[in-house]
Structure formats: C-alpha cells, structure tokens
Length: 141
Image (tube, rainbow, N blue to C red; front, side, top):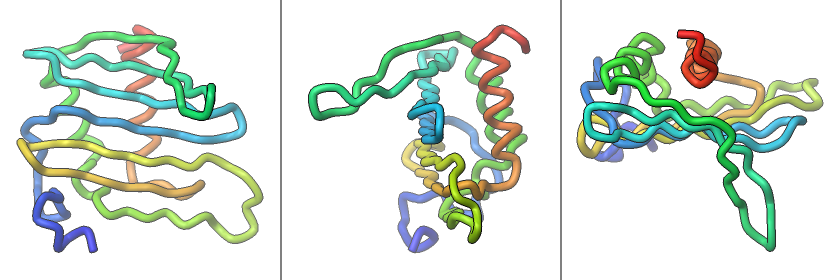
C-alpha cells in the first residue's frame, strides 16, 4: 500500500535532504502529546505540545519550543534511518495490556511523505529519535 503511492518516500530513498514538517503524536497513560518540527528558513523550530480535548476537539497547548539549524534535524532524521519507517505498522503485542501508541508523519524531499504508526511496537531507532528531540527541547544537546 505505501510503496506504491508515488508521493511516499518509500524504503528505496536512501537519504532525507530536506523537510517541511515532521509530527510525532504519542498517546499513553500520561495523556496525548505531539512533537512538531517545522522548517523556518535555515532553521528548524521544534515544539512540544500537550493535546487537550476541549469543546469537542483536540486543542494543542504549547509546552516548550526551541530552534536549531535545519541541517541538525536532517542529520537526526538520517541517523535514525527515518526513511525506513515509511509504512511501518506496529501492531500491539499480544498480552500487553497498555502502553504508548504513536503516529508519525513527515513531509520530506519536496513532496515525499513518510507515515508510520504503532502501539507499543516501534520502528528501529524510534527511542533514539524521541530522546534527541527531548534533548533539543530541554537544552541538553
């Protein structure tokens, strides 16, 4: 399904060279959160939101934001092999009663898309990616 869609980056793309937006939404026992990375000229804005359900819709509440060079984000995306995530479906493991689910969307390489989702089952280097985002956001990079 994913590899045949021409706007998807697919597993054949070896490298991300540019991006416009990257979003990672996680849902777990502590609530619903979203990381968002947006290209802004030569820089990238990395934001972390809490998602609250208010008056019948999701409302994003900004918790933290930082700015870094776009090349730093591109390097992170490639170091974590994010192109290989496209089409990943991490079905919830049998016998696991709760956990974290995620949805990942990225617009890359001027028209390419990467999509992945799962529940307590993540693509390779997922945790490294999230840890790096938190390091950026909390000034520990």
